[in-house]
Amino acid sequence: MKEGNKNYQKSYKKIYKEKYKIVTFPLSNIFYEQLRKNSVCVDTSTNTFAKNILTSYLNNTSFKILTKEQKDYIKEYVLISRGIANNINQIAYKSNINEQIDINILINSLKSYEEAFKKFISKI
Picture (tube, rainbow, N blue to C red):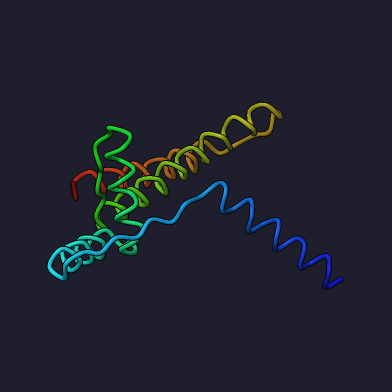
């Protein structure tokens, strides 16, 4: 079993080396600190941040930096949207199986999501 594991690791390393390359280059302390501070602001590692900048440049796309606060806003928006979608899905399901549904409960639930959404929008 150890022999099979050894062969697997060798073949994996060979394929990995053919598929991916590791690039290293020296940076002055000033540039490194600037890169590190920017990566902390967007809540990523320094290497990931540098990789994202470089790949954006090579793909001729603009590098979009989302701060932690922006990511939190997006997560909150997604949660509110999922809640609304879930309620609409429940309405459709219950109406398709001809089950009696209390519209007032669903409307109140949708109103609460509407209030949460308005509160979210006011933050922006």
